[in-house]
Amino acid sequence: MIRLLGLFLMLAAAPAFAGTLELSAPIEQGALVRGQTDPGAKVMLDGKALRVAPDGHFIFGLPRNAPAHAVLDVTFADGGGTRRDLAVVARTYDIQRIDGLPENQVTPDPETFGRVLHDIAMIKTAHAVDSDRLDFETPFLWPVLGPISGVFGSQRILDGEPRAPHLGTDIAAPPSTPVKAPAPGTVTLAEPDFVLDGGTLVIDHGYGLSTLYIHLSKIAVRKGDRVAQGQVIGAVGATGRATGPNLHWGVYWYGTALDPMLVAGPMPPAKN
Image 1 (cartoon, rainbow, N blue to C red):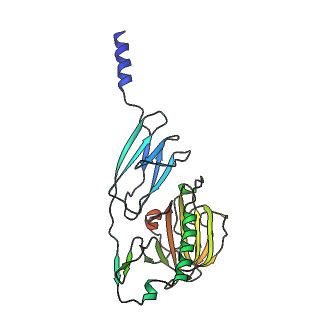
Image 2: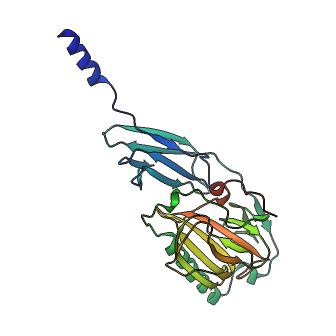
Image 3: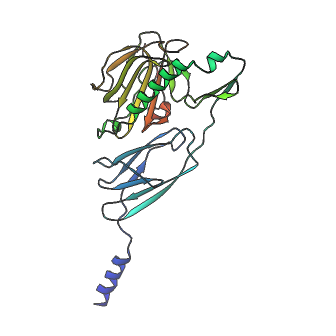
C-alpha cells in the first residue's frame, strides 16, 4: 500500500507530457520560420495567436528590422506547454546615398502619386488574404534563374530623404524568360500596368503567405486561377519603372516583407 501511494505521488508530481516543437533555421531578420507541433496545439508569438494547420504545421515571418528577441509559446492538447525564447540574428543592409537629383525624380507629381497609392493599396489587399490552403507547406523553388541584381533590405537615401527599403530580390534575365510559380497557390492579383511595378502578380499560398512578381512583360494567369508549382505564370520584362529586364520577386507574411533568398535557399545553377 505504501509503495502504491509513493508511485501515485511520483506520477502526480511528474510534468505534463511534452509535445513536439520543431523550428526551421535561420532565425534572423527577414526569415520565414516554419514550425511543426502536435495537431491541436495552440501557438502564440509574442502574445499573438498563430494559425496552426490540422497537421501541426505553422509559419511566421520576421520583418527586416525585427527586434533581437521573440517568444514562442505552445499549449498542447493535453494542457501541457512549452516556451521557446528566440534569439533573432540582426543583419546589415546596404544603404546608398544619392544627392543632386532633379525634384521630379525624388517626388512624383500629385496625379502620379495618387495612382501609385492606388496600386499599393491593391497589392496590400492581396497580401492580406488569409486562406486555409496548405500550399505554404511546399518548399519553395526559384521562379526564374539568373544573376541577382537587387537584394532584400537595401535602401537608398535620395537628396537626404530615405526611400522605402527594397523588399524583394531582383533577378536579371533576358526579356520574355518564363516565370514559374515557386509553390502551388491561388492568384489574388493580376494587373498588367501599375505605374511603378508594371505587370504585377500576387499568389496566395495559404495561412498568410503570399508572393509578389513585378515588371512582368506578360501575365499568363488570371485572378482566381489555381496554379501548380512550376507552372508558367508570366514572363520577365522591364515594365513600370525598371532599368532593364528583371523579375522583382517578393515574399510576404500578412503584409510583412520577407527575404526570398532565405525562403527559397541558394539558387541552383542554370541548366544549359
